[in-house]
Image (cartoon, one colour):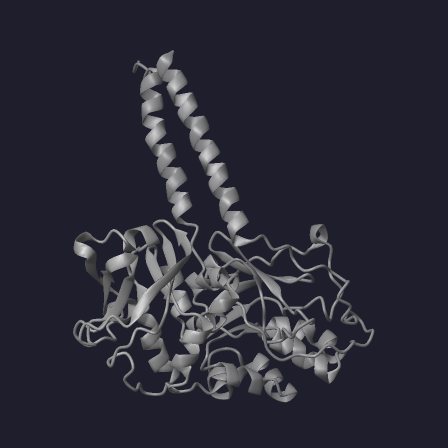
Length: 421
């Protein structure tokens, strides 16, 4: 009979595995540049353009990144040049370094200077080495930044550290836009997708017909170029919902349809990593019209206060447009009676594991009229169903990290105790 391993040997084997589990789960907590900058209104314009150029998603996907943030004044100088969205994307991608630089590292550069690659270089958009940024620690603690293709001119300077999460993401404010002839070169205008043509061909005809009939298609179309995520209910789900839909006023039909769209492109991976409350095309000031994206393993669910719907397929994925199929019509609490959480209907079982997705914020058109009493629709009473609780990113991160730290300490104590037996 094999002899069992002594306790000290078992402890020495278990500890590395436990620590690997702790720290690998820690690395899964992705940063979200949009949420971080939302806490700093002086960067609101910069944050907005990271979103509409889709650079925010690229930043969030990378494990190690440094963002050279521009305040609203610096962004105004850039926008005064009237560049296309494509050119603005190239310019801003020059401000995203694919390495980690905290304030301390900036002032302790080896030989006082270094070259850092940027997203502009990494994506292949730059010509030659024009996508590299020169970082130089100058006299008196001043740190300058300049692109490689501007003759070595350091035209922008370090202002302050905004956020540092070593060695994951660092956000540093710099004084001006880093100029680059290559990044500022004109870009071809993107080919716009015509929703009335592509939706019916890709399995979203019934929902597309409702959008056209209600006049909501124009709002969707106007958001395509800047990024659009749509949730298209299946034909069976729409047919089952039609009696309720017919009881809505014309204005509330539009609000319901706009509730199925978000003014941002969210790939499946981005959707899964951005769980939480998100705004929709129907969001408008006091009329929240938001819902919660929740991931359960490989399943992505859209939870309103009335119903939980599951993403069952990806019908279209052609950036800046992505369309997901969902198994239920999304019903906002502003139009329908909220269901207590414990009574919420469980998501319908999925027929086949296809593609799924999640979150991002940005408001658009809607109305705040009261709906007529009907079979299910109710007035848009804000007191009926509170918005989902939102935990701040900082508090959430501290909570998770604190729990992990406590677990590590307890495991180390147990391990040492066993070794001393």
